[in-house]
Length: 96
Image (tube, rainbow, N blue to C red; front, top):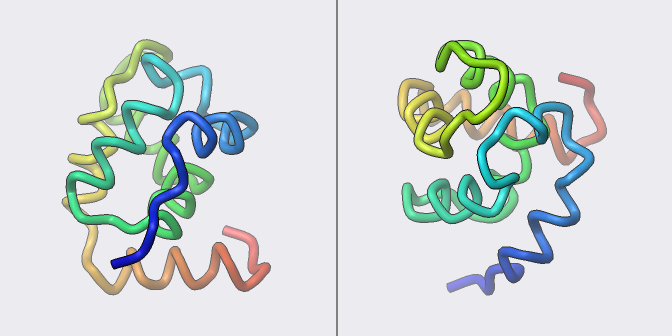
């Protein structure tokens, strides 16, 4: 089992992600929820730094105060291969 980065540290490190201001409570609730949904830390980071975070917020229908569950629900609708591809692209230096 891999060790997780502490949530507060990971949330701080990801605070420069594009959609940060849209999510209620910053990234800590989303990190917790995505981990609970079975994502590892690389996948969590890839999702938070990707357009998926923006699209999930857009689907939720508000500019700010988006709950973490909106991101989890969006990710759940994606295929496992899409998540693998997103993660691979995120850590290979490729732009999304």
